[in-house]
Length: 315
Image 1 (cartoon, rainbow, N blue to C red):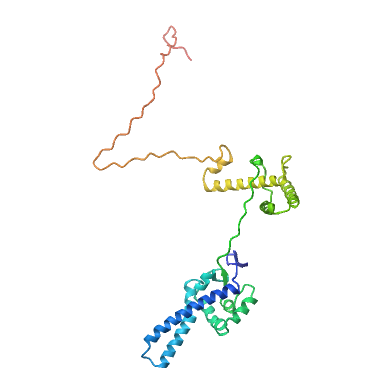
Image 2: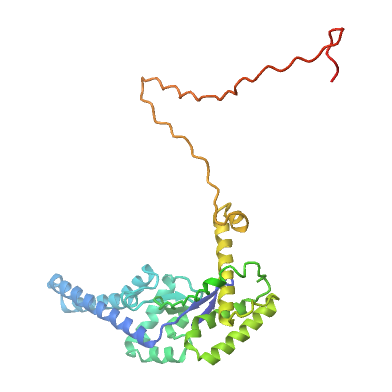
């Protein structure tokens, strides 16, 4: 894989195309161009029957140069580096920084291709591609381009096995902030490949990784818990926290429910009443009366005692 650095300091991982795939793409393109040239020459032979031999030869040479040089340049310019052969083989011509090519890049590649592909029967292009680290021919070097593979087989991701059910939620309060990413990667690689290892070697690796994890977290596992099961439970706890944090950022109000209180509860808005449209000329119906609750009348309050002067005593 070739690492290219763009102007924004972004590293691009591109897989350069090698000689066999590029040769197959060029042969397919050449077959298509030759078939097109034969069809064009047959059509010109009927239309130029009244011309002399010199004019017919000039038209034939011009048509050949146009189909061999002009058509490939036009196809690569319009398709941004994808000809029919490259499209069939999953290849594409890009710039050195990974961007799409333009007319000047296709022009330089097409002009140099006449010399290193047609006149030398591809020997110069093969030697240059084999010598180059990224498989570039002379036209690619002068044009500042690179032929890369677009269809790359994706790597199969093996999931981490789940922990035993009796360990689920046992490490909810474990502090995982001090665990580095390198240790997480080593634990994940071990858990995804532990079935392929020797039992003694796998047990030793699990014990070492568990000791490193305990040294980072500061909390030993419960007594009697195997090292592999302890690693599974801790990785599952970290994945659960990452998922809760991701969903809390995507759904407002979800993080509070996951952090405390009822887990996974999302606040639900009150339903909005929907009013049906009223046709023209019809008075809208009055809303239904809502019964109002009235407390039953109780016994009358006793009258406060009065003094002789008729004034109520001070409270």
